[in-house]
Length: 485
Image (cartoon, rainbow, N blue to C red; front, side):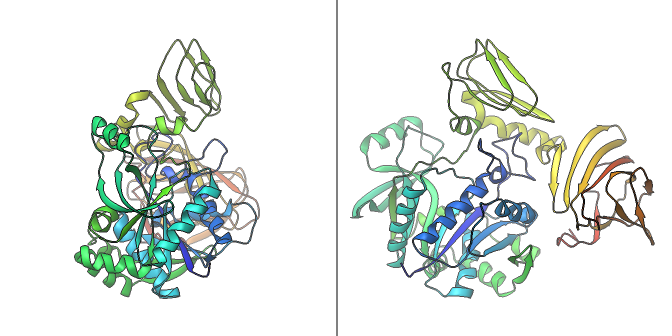
């Protein structure tokens, strides 16, 4: 096939439904499955597999600016191979799928013309049958080349009120139909009736169309959004990060974009929509119950991962880490253990996890946002202990990396080097710091930490102050583009 194909991966989210494994700073696409590979990594691998069937020039990733370094790290974990380039379209704030897809379409047109075909793939879906996925994608690409706007429908396995549905109309060809209508999250009894009719499929949230087709449809059905996107694209900036090209936008202008889904903006209104009835397995991993179902069940119906043990327990899922979790005499639970939070929920109530996140956010508890160990572009930090007026962190800086030049208004810091060698900037001075040496960073003093040697730098940091939140950072210079945030 000679068509130019551009997989567009949409990667973001607030990390609410899979808390505490997923947090706002590290949402669902970065969660590792039972084989250790993240959903984003699996989606990238799935996108690159399409290069066997079509002219795949590059992959476009649309994600939040804060997720850039984690996304590039996930791509580096792919098996060795010759992959097409990855270009990253960076959103300063989330604005739903319609703006994301519109900007991706502009990016494709700018480099490869209006006939470039976009295959839109959410980064948080799990699809195991890659051959069946490629077959469905090939059919969608052919329909998109004819000017159709294509969506993928999943054959329902149960009456699921939490999903959207597509009513299929006249048959177009083998495995494809026109679309009669979209139904958003029906009541359970309505879902049963729709499935019984045989004309309805789940709306997967995956799409395929020419870049020009989707922009024309947006101009017709969502003209306000299309106008703002056109203006944004005209002022976009380009750059690079770890070998990947990047596209960025003015945050103030970006915030003016309407918060619209592509379903609402186009799919429910356009007249040339087709549906490919997909033959592959699919899960959007939308809850702990859905994630649990990806694990094999034992004789009692329990699904276990990590250091988990059950006695007299049935139909219970335990997601443990290295710490042993033992369940005795309980049924129908989901138990999730992380270093700083434990979730225990009835298996039928896992959708309510988002209410826990909302309560944490309301109370100013940063466990809605950060893990105990939080990845950063330069390495990671782990909160070891926290109390009134103090916080103790273990900080690891990768070789050749540097933290931003910054200051804090409400805390001072004591640094002790336990491994490697640091280059410290404090005020007007820059000096080395070796193992078992320490320094003091006064409040409201510009400072920076760098690792100039080959081995990792490990440091213990003790913070003291009346406020120790991660937002008490003023950045003056940053190699990762975060200065001024």
